[in-house]
Length: 191
Ligand code: IMP
Image (cartoon, rainbow, N blue to C red):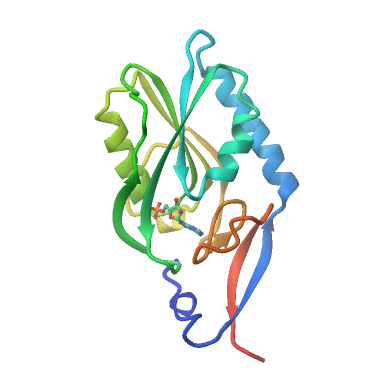
């Protein structure tokens, strides 16, 4: 994401282009597998709290939960570390907190992408301090090339290259979240 071309796209009138990267069918098939894998290890006798990390994971979260066969509670929080462009500001802020108590509960954090790991590290610390019985991480994407800090990932949809991706919940400047597929964002000079 340290793509300086990307960050100056607006000011230098570069042309945005989205190159298909992960097709909708492939995402759906992998999401079903993740749901089955999680369902196989979660308790049948008490609801697991599935935490949706807004904004980016809303689409993945909705699709994943359709494949969970054990009891669930839904819960939402929001974090912010990006300020518009394609580079993380590095400072993670909780902008919306959970409204339920997760003490002594089984919890799964559902994230769109683990990139530097800073957001997940922050979330793990914040949620661990609330004393859940268990805490798992399920991320649709993992971009290991950008790793700044190691975080445990229990379930991962796809390991991706060092590219900035949009679609299926992921945005560039709050756009493209509605795409049913994931594409790589390119910024081309005008012809
Ligand atoms: P991290 O803290 O660097 O691991 O970044 C986590 C957050 O950054 C994710 O939840 C996303 O919202 C955002 N992010 C990281 N990489 C990308 C990307 O390639 N496209 C869109 N958003 C990204």
